[in-house]
Length: 587
View 1: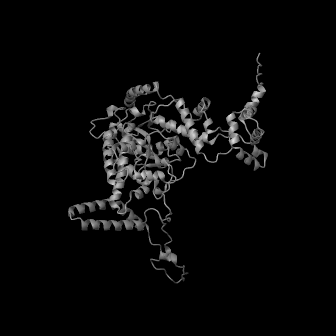
View 2: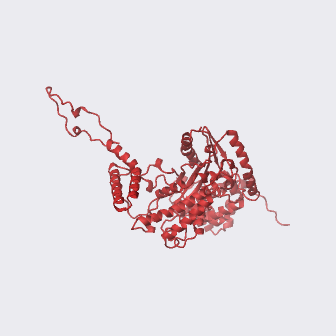
View 3: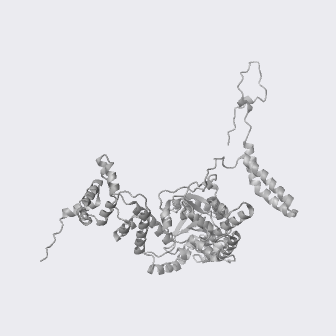
């Protein structure tokens, strides 16, 4: 009869659990000493009640552990609580971003897919980690993304459901078909007009990206410190059913990038926000709602003579706050997973905008080539900053027609779309792609002269592709550097903004330009028309110049003189400046 192994006592089991839960550096040294005594990994693991892989990991970090103990002079330094492995923490942060991104793009997910992604991300992060310190965490290949870990991960990041495929996919279509009727009843009940109904959505934009086959992108990728995510921003786009588009919100990595150092952030063509990942969060979403959306909606409706009664529609993406409130504003969330089917901004508006952005980026290059005799494509691209990006964004948005924006509400609210005669978003994109191909061929060079429509379309689609592992790695880096221009020397600090002297130079340069037009253009009527246009355009600066000139008043000359004690018999002149004790403050 085989020997029956006795069950471990309750006390010994609890002791093992306590040992698994807490480790000191001294215990790790004792564990390493047992290994030096030729004890097997399995025997040591049983002794401490831990996994064999953990024993191997401690052995791998033996030098660091013994060094730490050697420099510790007090007992408290030898006792540390178990700290979660930094690579697991970083992996979980990246995984949460990836899940949010996939949900936003209606990419099917389930628990097995997410756990496999977790293993892959951890493998990459652990491999890339530099100088790992002493830890009881497993080796990369030993992280199994267990069911228990997955349950805890869901609780930590408040992920309620990950079932997005199979039956859920058909349910999405069914919900998208039913919701417009519910929406119509709500509109009729509350009496909303198209001007009062808005939809917001956010999208990523790689603002400095060209087709990968072009030589400027190949050179960028070879540059030291190149990061694909460096030039990514998030745009928050919002428009109403009447075809009005608000000033977009923009989330950048930096609060004050060098290219915008002299600019008033309140006077940009976008509402500027920032965080380390250039990613929308509930805090930034709330900030956009109160500081950007509400003021613009109020001004817009006031100018139309309409009541401030607003319906704001959005999807239930992770970065959208669920508790937004402002008197007169109703927030309506679309049914889960219907974004791509019925959300107005996703019915071609964002895609058409990105096509126009790509075309206008190339137009900037061609314009620079035509006007700068020392132009080089590499040199210009190096100086294509976030300030240039904002200019291109503004131009692209201006080209979005009111009729086009209105037509994108057809699936959600067909009753508000009437007599559409403009270009559809698809036609706008097709036209922009054709123009982009033409401009690229004008630029010439590797990857430009033989560019195809497919490559341009792939570039536009790349803004909406799922985040790669490299993207996630960069997005979760703990330290985010401010955007810097690549240069070997720092320019000396100069006085920033418009000064009286700089405005004067602008006036003189304008006069010189008008003189050249008048002298060189044989078509006199055309020259006069252009110069009149310049006069009208420069009038704003002339007004600023006049105002600043008035503000610069001559200080009283007496402030440079020593006061002279007057005789009792002397009478001051009528216009004695010494009596004027008022000084004009400098602006």
